[in-house]
Image (cartoon, rainbow, N blue to C red):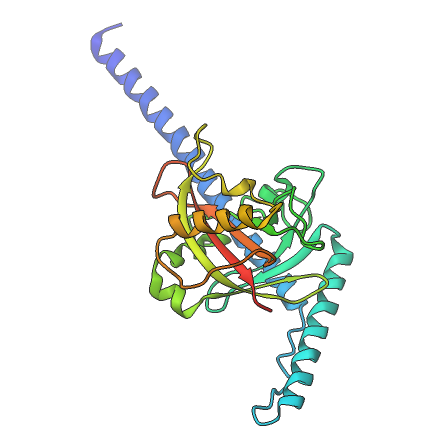
Length: 267
């Protein structure tokens, strides 16, 4: 076989390999975006099942009537959550932040670690999964701290919007997180926003270990650490007896980074 023929064969092999790589890569991209589209559609379907009392008028000039209207809205939401719970009894609550894409069911399966990391509401595979409560936390008792994990996906879905809190100006206008359990409606005010590395072997701040404080000092020390690592001073703190939620998502600005938002219950 002459040199020219050898080069031609090698050229064909290279072109063939590149074509295979292209097809595989394209398939992954298509699958990713199709899965993302399906996930958004499924979540939209769940949102449509929630009655948030949009048709109820809230009077500004009558406190008694205002309270009645707000109570009716809360009642309708909780009834909606119960109906969703009947579809999947791993549902423990719903999280929503105004002016963001964060409007999701929150799941928990205590018997299986990270079960909803790659599962949808139907318990089928989904790249984005669903926000879920860490297995050693309890939203109903509740534990002092309820840690909620969610993906930060490249197209901006799931908990990706949490990265907006790196900007203090955004925080100033969106300091409230709505996190309802399927039994009660609650609001939380953000205390701290920080980025730390995890799974390093020597994590500087293992925030994920704080679930319940055995005394005032333990609680205060945790809050001090949160404030120490926070990107900015929120002017908000918490004291022993307050109930916290901690939202966690990936932050690719550092290796093995996690963006963490800690908030206390105010309502």
